[in-house]
Length: 123
Image (tube, rainbow, N blue to C red; front, top):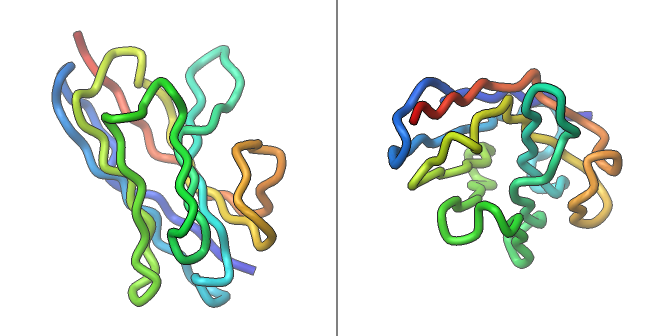
C-alpha cells in the first residue's frame, strides 16, 4: 500500500508555469506505475499524464502534449508534473495516483490516490 500527497498547486496567470509534486510513502515507490489526473468542476476526471515504474513508458493527453512533463525519481520517490504555458482550461484539481500492474490512462484502474492540489490559471 502507498500513501500519496500532492503539492505545488496554486494560482498562476495564463502562460505561466507550475511544478506539481507527489510524495509517496509506505510501499516501495518503484513498485508502482504513476499517473496525474485532473478534474474540473462538473467534469469527469481525466488523465493528464502517466509514467511507468522505471519511466520506460510515458503518456500525455493531447491537450497537454508539449506543455507538460511527467517525471519520477525512484531514489527519492516523488513524481513530478512540470506544467508550462498554462491555459485557463488547465484549471482543475490535480491528483496523482498509483497502480501496481501496468500503466493506464483510465482513472478507474488506479488503486491509490492523493488528496489533490488545486491549480487555477487566470486569463
